[in-house]
Image (cartoon, rainbow, N blue to C red; front, side, top):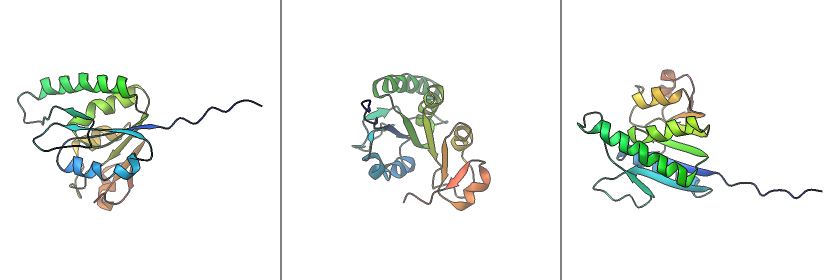
Length: 157
């Protein structure tokens, strides 16, 4: 009779940009507390006490976007090596992209939750990250028509 190894508790990485994406992601806090977890978002003027890590805030109109994305990618690698997550769960957007790539590279589970703010349109992040998502959740039934892998999960609000 062999000795059974205790089951490893999965570690979850919750990552999203600030604003509405962050508000939605925080609604998953009850899920987070069932596992090992950490939250990542962007540094803004608003407090994010739940976030263990704060990345540089950027968007497509930012003149320094490329530099900030490179910095965030390096920081994401640091976080990844330190934390070693088993799952990445995100509501998007740009700050989540390096974690998406790391999840694909290291064959970890990737869960994308499409934003509540887009009932009738797909998002660029959703279209890009759907391909390698293990679970792709939409918050509106009407969003399902835009994605092949979409599963309706209801709204986080």
